[in-house]
Length: 388
Image (cartoon, rainbow, N blue to C red):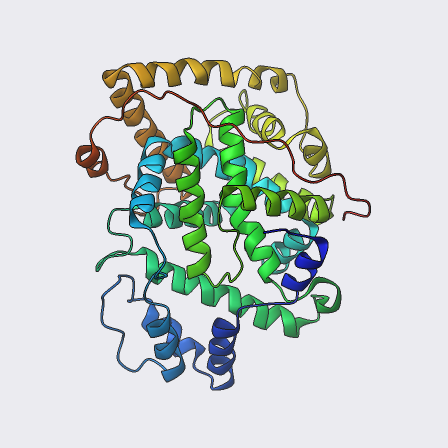
C-alpha cells in the first residue's frame, strides 16, 4: 500500500465509531459509574458478563469478544517466543525509545498532558508492560485469558478521552482531528512495534526476520482489536507508514519536554543514589537520536559516549546465548528477574502479577543457533518541508 500525506489527513478525521457510540450512550444515560463498578470484576475471557450491565455496553462487549478471523495462530506463537526470548530488550525499548518517540509528536504530547495520564508515569509504564504481558501469554485469547477484556477496556478508555476532550475546549479538532484518531492510533501501533524493533537493533540485539515479522504481526492483531481499521498489513508497509507519520508529525513541544523529564526522573528515582542518573538520558538519546532528544530536552553528559558501547557488550551476550544452551537459560533467567524488579520499582511495591510464563520454553524447547540477523532498512521517505 502507498501512504501519502493525503492518507494521513484522511485518517486524522476518523475515530472509532463502535466505541465512540458506546461511550456516548453511557454518558447520555448516566450509566458510566454503574458500568465502571461492574467491569471492575470482569477481567477474563469466557467470564459471564456482569448482570445489570447497561445494554449498550453488553452489545459492545459481545461484538468485540473475539479476535479477528484472519489471525494466523502459528505467527502469534512465534511472536510469543520472540517476546519470551527478548522480554528485557522489549521492555527497555518501550521505556527509552517508544515512549519518548510518542512525546516527540506534539499533538500526542498535548493529549497526554491534557488527560493527566502521565502525572503518575510509573502507573502508565506498568500498565503498558502488563498489557504486553497479557498479549504474550499462551492463554491470551482463550477462556481465562486477560488480554481481550483489557483491550476492550482500553478501547473504551480511548473513546472516553475523545468524548471528554472533544467537549472540553482544550482540543482543536479542526486542526488535529478527533483525539486519538485513526492516524495516531496507527502511529501508536508503530511506536510499540517498529520503534521497538529499531531500538533493539541499535542495542545490538540479534533478531531473525521471522521474529521481527511475528512481533509486528502481534501488534497488528492488537490494533484490530483496539479498533484500528487500516493498519499496515506487513513489516514493509508498516515501515513506510512509520517513516511518513514521524516525518510529518515529529517536532518540539513544551508538553513533550515535560513528559520526557517525568519519564527520566521516574527511572532515576528507581535506582538508589545519583551516580547512574545520567545513564537514563544517555540511553534515550542514543536510541532516539540527537535531533529528537534535543526537541525533548534530554540532557547530555559524558555518559552519552559510554552508552554507545552497549551494543558491543550486548553482542557478546547474544553470541553466548546463541551458542550455549546454558548461556541461553542463564540470560533468560536474568532477564526474567530484571523485568520483575523493574516493574516492582515502577509500582512501588504494589501487587501486580507480571509473570513471564516459562512453559513456553518447555513447550518449544531450545531454539537452534541463529544463522541470519534482521536489521532495519533505511528511511523510506525524504525530508518533508513543513513537518510539525
